Amino acid sequence: MDITNVVAGNARRIREEKKLTLDAAAAATGVSRSMLAQIEKGEVNPTISVLWKMANGYKVSFTSLVEPRGSGVSVLRQGETAPLAEDDGRYLNYPLFAFDEQKLFETYRIVILPGGALSAQPHLAGSEEYVTVFAGRAEITVDGRSFALEKGDSIHFLADAPHAYRNPGQETAELSMLIYYGRAT
Image (cartoon, rainbow, N blue to C red; front, side, top):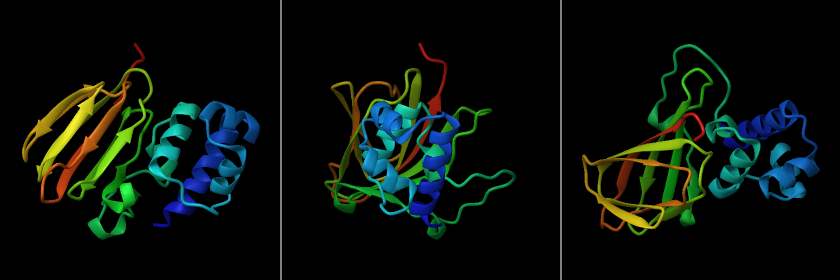
């Protein structure tokens, strides 16, 4: 899957569905007009932070920007999903199942190398995250409070506040993440 072309098509489609000019989209997202144009043309591969700004500004899910559209049965093979990388490749986000208006959630596989971290922007009001650690250790900070998680531990939190992920351990951390876009509070 070529993530740059998928993002390009989705970003353009979403902006057009919302009847936004590039200038209006830049104002809504906090991403420059020129960067949005480059993204829509498939000329750049945006960072996770830029994609979150776009998702929040357009009031859509993250995966609506990064996943191809489709329906039916989906089988995802580990080697077929290209990751979105942050922190010099030490934080890898593998988008798995995209947001669906009927289900109101999306899922990810997160791989954090030792010392890797990501500070996430607050998501839409009413959003919740459900995270389970399947390997290694992770420290998740929500609204200034830190939680140490080991293999097999899970956490649920309101994701419309600042939050961050970090691998304080010596081995790779692997997490499953579900983001639920519930009713705004």
